[in-house]
Length: 157
Image (cartoon, rainbow, N blue to C red):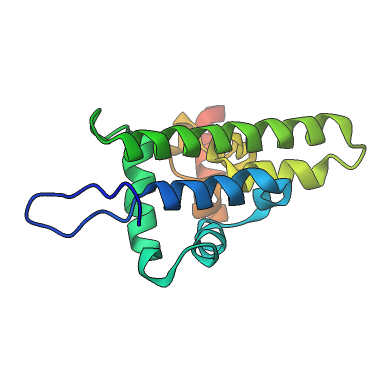
């Protein structure tokens, strides 16, 4: 392992230059990684690492959450690099999906992937939740409850 950061009272972090390089290779060498789940991405990265450098799904999720929340210390250069790499991959994936979405005559498949990969683009969920349901999805309301809500809004009792 190279560039190992030693933590006081604990074992060295596996967030190393080797991990970063493997992640970079997986994320940017093939655009089809856009369809991978996090677990599949991690499997692909782990395949490029020595057995002692591989990480678990739980560790990956913790790192991803730290990267998303910006919780890596400024002195943690590997963490900062992982944050940059993770955010760049998401931006590039979103951009590739938007290009495909806007140029393909069969745009529905790209919209489907976009909605599942990026929650802010899940238009069905967004359109089914509003102030009248107090943030609850319309799918959670029974037909009778939904009818009652509609009648109430229309002023009918």
